[in-house]
Image (cartoon, rainbow, N blue to C red; front, side):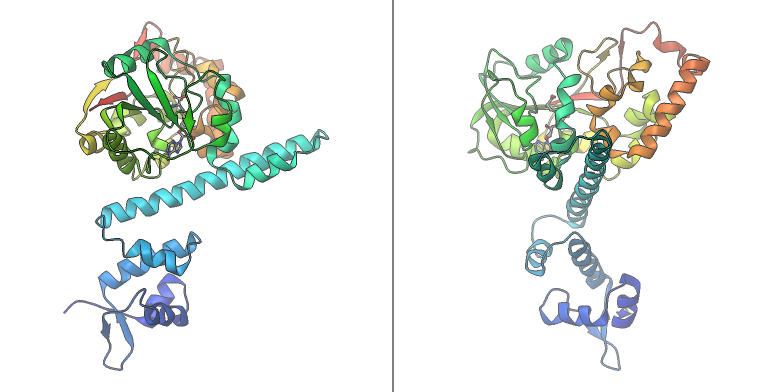
Length: 371
Ligand SMILES: C[S@@+](CC[C@H](N)C(=O)[O-])C[C@H]1O[C@@H](n2cnc3c(N)ncnc32)[C@H](O)[C@@H]1O
């Protein structure tokens, strides 16, 4: 017979009161499927799975009615549900990290006698990650023409193009009719005056009818999406062709391939736990996968861009334009930068990476998905 946990044991393990569990039972949220001989509620493994989901949403601050809707959602299996939960938790973590960064900046500003404006204060509490780091973005993030050429060639003869997670519009082709989608107000505000029109929306829910565009593109953004597979399917729904620039987040493909994450910032590994693999992403939209090499003098300052120019990572403005550095937290960032500085001074970095000096372009796991 299947093992059951008594209500008392469940309450103890999950650190909630028995009264809470009774209430969930009474409102139909988690109804234990059995009773002990003594008449006490008893929870099966399946009941526990549902309860765990309910409690996690509760800790995320969802109301009981909203939770009921989420846990009764017939779409998606256990893995999809865990991914959704994970996405929400990771977003909360990122939001907290971004708020810590914003508070640090405010403290620095106060120390210099500068007061933040009411607008800045409000933006911090409503902040998405890019609402806080967004204003540092244009310092080093711009179009890399060789990578842009690969993306534009993959767009084929598409005349109308949707750019999802468009940011400041770095990779928008100028010779086609582009519509941009960008959820962050800070990023939208930094789009050049002559940039394509931009809609405030998220990839997971694109406000367009089926097949409205010849092509949809997403550049260096899907790792920020709450549910990348849902976002890709949305792109597929609204466009006949889909082109996505992303990275192969496997250890062998990316994490251990780049000296920065391998030798100095292994915390990057924690940021990608549970994310769909590049093959899963490609499968979701039936895409083929093309490698994208990074030129040694890459003009766009994304995380891997300075693989042959390691001194760049010592620069605060270079790091501030890449969300990874904010997401790993200030302690890991400080440690990695100090270690790299020491290794560059002592010559240890060059000893460890002799093969890079003569390389003009590197294969660091960046990929184009074309469907
Ligand atoms: C690294 S930036 C890339 C911006 C631009 N594609 C580029 O290459 O310059 C990532 C962007 O994804 C956006 N983003 C985050 N979550 C998103 C979501 N769920 N749907 C669409 N865009 C999102 C961020 O606001 C940010 O502008």
